[in-house]
Image (tube, rainbow, N blue to C red; front, side, top):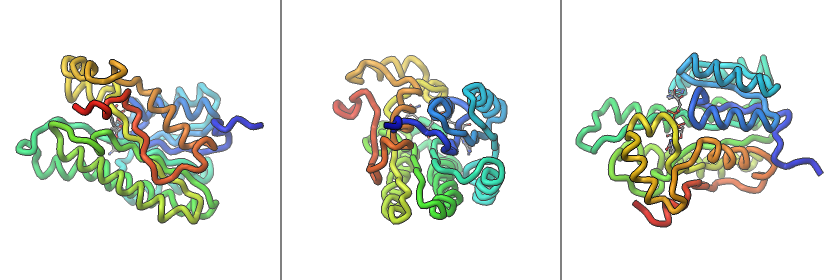
Length: 254
Ligand SMILES: NC(=O)c1ccc[n+]([C@@H]2O[C@H](COP(=O)([O-])OP(=O)(O)OC[C@H]3O[C@@H](n4cnc5c(N)ncnc54)[C@H](O)[C@@H]3O)[C@@H](O)[C@H]2O)c1
């Protein structure tokens, strides 16, 4: 029996894979056999991820345009097709975080939040789906958040954008099912990456960890296990779902 967790021969495009969870997804999927399209506006970080992927014996190509640029996303897919082949897996992971009250959120901040999370996920999927339709198979994994499902005390614009990502996931699961393109969302709880450390600070994070039944936030690779599960044969009958690796956080609320 072949190992259903393997991704040999697959090409995975992971947005925001220069650091944090995106890099962890890239490294795990490469370790399981996938070639990786590394994509991040942070150039040095993206190159470092590509180096790590190549050290695992897999191919990597690097792109730096914003996910919010639809024309650039179409070009990325075309160039990947020439260099590696048709993309099999898209992980819409790129994101930004902000902790602000509703009063503090400016129109520009609101726009940027939606440009990156919602429009970005939309444009990347729009660019990649024709190839998946052609080969009658594909996986799209949208990174939402537990804050797309439950209430947060701050950052209403982030919560709304992440909830919209769940809407995209469900709509696409239905729209693309006839082409064997499976679409799911991951809604992580707190994950120890640069984003929350910068936005919230370690003191707040340590206090929040006490509210998590498992007593801690996740390491990035603990979210990657769920992403890779959905990307591989292990996820072959799962579509339109959301999985929340959150240490039990949503059992107790905030
Ligand atoms: N860390 C958490 O606690 C947490 C919890 C739930 C969900 N998330 C989500 O997980 C995803 C990854 O977050 P992370 O914690 O690894 O953060 P991170 O800041 O470490 O990584 C996000 C990456 O996305 C890149 N990026 C941002 N805007 C981009 C754009 N326009 N185009 C291309 N790349 C862009 C950044 O440069 C960065 O490398 C995000 O969508 C985030 O909202 C994070």
